[in-house]
Image (cartoon, rainbow, N blue to C red):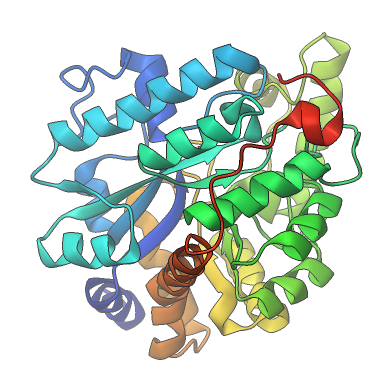
Length: 397
């Protein structure tokens, strides 16, 4: 075994990874309707890239499970599907209670680790999941959801998406109220998927640090899903963290170009490239005729080092987005591969203390800061009863 890989595994044993984003719950929904007798995560699963043995091999100590639902769902349908996803994650945690532990706070993550369990947290991916209702937002928080990505691939009535035609110039007044209420609750504001104007507006409004749960650097790979340098600088000033993702489309310029071409081909056939489910199926067929370039560990390292350079070592993390895309960089094919990434960083002379921040420390610090802001705000601010109709003059969705 190379010395750097052995060192990487020792580092992960001492500082188990807190990963920002994994879409296994959606795969469990689609493949088996959350029946974990049929999708037994205690053994290696052929139909996913995530299971318990590989999480252990990868040195994962805490995982934010995405309770994603497609943004093609709207209104009550989106809320219902999100609740089913939340229920599915709770079912998964109960099924594997010897291996997984529900976590709501940074302290819960530490406790889970001390008990030999992988801390399991929930993140909702897209503002469509709250149906333009602050009460629904609070209900999701009560069920354990600890971040909300403000949009997914489509805009919502109160926030613009990175991959949709802008409509509101970032955040509406109701969108700003969503951010304020998230601050009061202690729910992290996640700016992955949102337009740069939305990023800047949220950073302006938020009284707590924000996160990017699975985004990379736009200066390295110029795709709308990545974070511009000026936003990385403001993220630093606000104490947040950018959790670099492994999605080849967002880390490799060559793959990003291939995706642009595939999206154009899909649109010609009436497949909406923003429809995550439909486009994923189309892309698999398209790749048979037009081979997709391969991303590499080096591509991911380039993003990590750029975020470190611009935002600083205290503001970079990891959000692999496993089971959320159809291909991965060579060498990072499943959740067991994190040691190989850490090994590459060791070879790049990252210090042990910097790697500890990357793997765990930065995200835990942000969580604690968000929790502290919420405790302070709850002494002076009641739950918001404002509505989108009242603030934006539009009906609820």
